Each structure stands twice: as structure tokens, then as C-alpha cells.
Length: 80
Image (cartoon, rainbow, N blue to C red; front, side, top):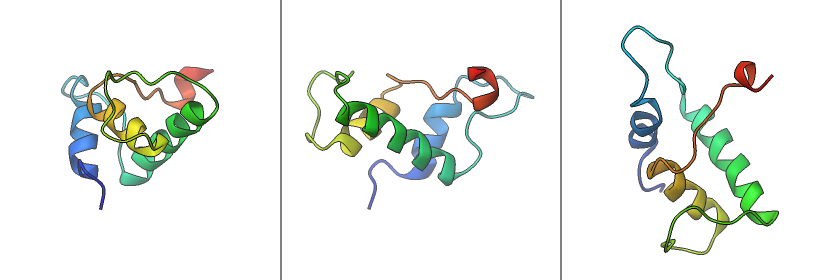
């Protein structure tokens, strides 16, 4: 089981969205994709953004970073 939960992660990611705007994350699938992408970056050598990760596994570190608002999810439209 994922801790924090998907809904908790979605609330953290969407907390900076103002009322009436489109949320950054609409589904659990989006959270999974974003977390997996960050985990891949960690595997490829990126430095963790959390001071003392609870676990050394890249996916766990990515979840901690996302929950701690250390990384931001940018939609594909904004990347271009």
C-alpha cells in the first residue's frame, strides 16, 4: 500500500491551484506517471530533494518528494 495515499498526494499537488482553475492532477494514473518519471530521474543519477529519505528506493524517495512539495508536476502542454 502506498503511504501517503493517492488522494493525499493529489491534494498536495493540487493545493496551489486557485478556485475555478483546472487541477494539475485529475486521477491516480497521473500521480503514478509523475512519480514513476521522478523515480526514473533518481535512478539515472539525480540527487534526492528530501534531506533524509525514509527509504533508499527511488520510488519511495519520489513519493516523499512529491508529498513534501519538493517537485512540481507540469502538464505536457506547458512543457512545450
